[in-house]
Length: 123
Image 1 (cartoon, rainbow, N blue to C red):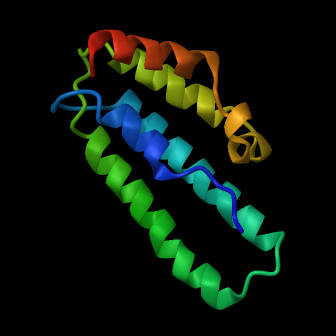
Image 2 (cartoon, rainbow, N blue to C red; image 1 turned 90 degrees about the vertical axis):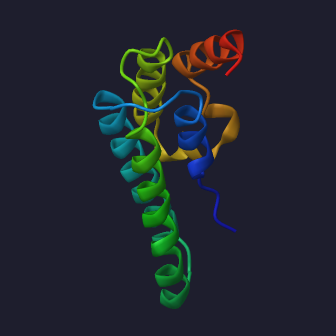
């Protein structure tokens, strides 16, 4: 079975804040989403997954990025969690595909800080 990170991590960052415009966060989310997709595709290529199954998975991966882009577009740049969310996504993007597949290795100091700030803010 494939082990890839889901859009839930990306969505959890974007759901903690209220509507407005985004730029850095949108770019970071898109970059991370594309990396997640490329890691998933690379993992599929390393396995004997039928082409039909790959074709079925592609829309799910594409839809994940579309959903994230939609949510990130609503995040206000002035929100106190905006910069920590950007830092978290950028730090996750620096992880290897192997680390992204290991839930224990996916936590970064930036994401831990973001999660702590979000909890303190009650969001």
